[in-house]
Length: 591
Image (cartoon, rainbow, N blue to C red; front, side):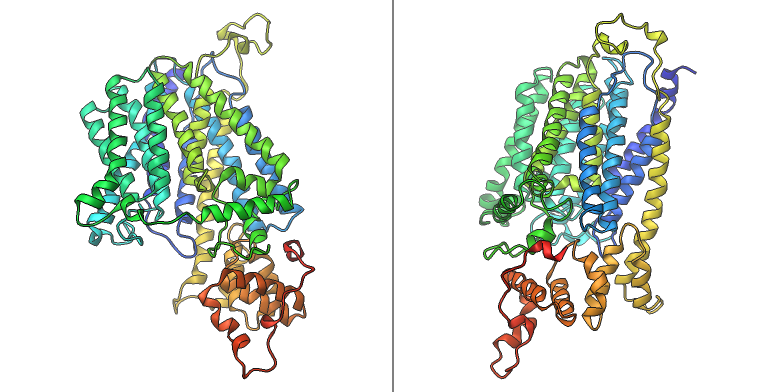
């Protein structure tokens, strides 16, 4: 059997597994406490594992060696950062393993994307990009339908098949996050373009889908999605002269209509929906967290606070005028890397990412024929999620990271290959294509790793299901203490069990061990009060008082009872939370 027939035989399977990987995770509305999106992410890893299992062979000639080397270098450096924070820092195992493994998975998925781009010739763009594009467009159309139901027919949102929106007048999709919904929808618009250009979708239908999806972007109320998506789509229409004139006009018209929809909703209808509901919104609290993050960079510019430690370090750093929400991220990818990795390593990672983005642009621009439409669409998807990452953190979620990695790998594998790369030595005579031997050209490594992903995803789902019973109130379950102890053995989700232990232990000092781990996930009022009480009971009064001072900065209503004795004149012996803050401590004293 020839490689071409082998790949052809797998085309139907590939379409099916890509559909599962791209459609199912964002559409899964069912969730279990404590994480609203954990099952979505595990389903995403499972789906992409199947995609790797269905990987085809690379061609016997014309393949690009080391296509994703630069991108893999950036991902590898981030893996090193996770390992350093885990081994030399205080990041718990259950908070280190998931991002570490996901970064490795992203590297393999990028390799899969690169391989897909090299499976066909310049005129065979359909086979290479079509399964991915069909999956992205399908999830976009279905998410747009869900958006319309959430805003205009909310009684149909049952919470299981269709999530209920907790934001009046705005769509949140089944991911329950309007910014995530908006980026997913803009992705689907981008993926729609090559399908229309190839004739896989009639132009009239493509135009209707384009308007429908952009209307859903408006319903999300996401200014990042609306304005960022508009900029990307207009830029594409303006610079890519190889798109048909009708497609370019359709993109501009759809964007224009989406941008005027807030005005139409506010002035010509009886109720404001979507972006129009945010007309009176003030400046985002993101500016405040960015200011705090820059101050943290100033305080520790070279080594940073450690991967995954932003929330821990930020919460325990004095900021009298801090934003009162409990941020676990800076909401800006470059700033997040700089504050956690330190300036030198972060700039190296960012430089490699920008280099890979530029490499991809050069290669997709050189891709001619039908394949070029798919290649440039893949690059625009990467650009779009990069823009979103300047104001949010979508790439911290598997259902954005892995499709972005595939698209990034696809751009890097696109384009004509220099003749010199076939010989392996620049300047030497090229090897005859029929005699070229390439290690791993059969794709065995990808398929073995894909199988491992499927197994780990299933095992992790069982593990999460087991841990989630801690947060259920069911008389048929084991006692809470036993469920917590069982959950603390989880390699991926032990921090959830530690949180439950830390916030239910009586006295709190019995949970000091659990607090050492739970506090590195997300410090909130409940956890900080329990931690301060535990420290005070164990004789660590200065640390308890410092922690209380940080808690006061958040000015949360759920701490009023905790601080009530401080304002009670009838209490003469004040508890520790009423004492002044010590001046000789910093966040590093709590690691």
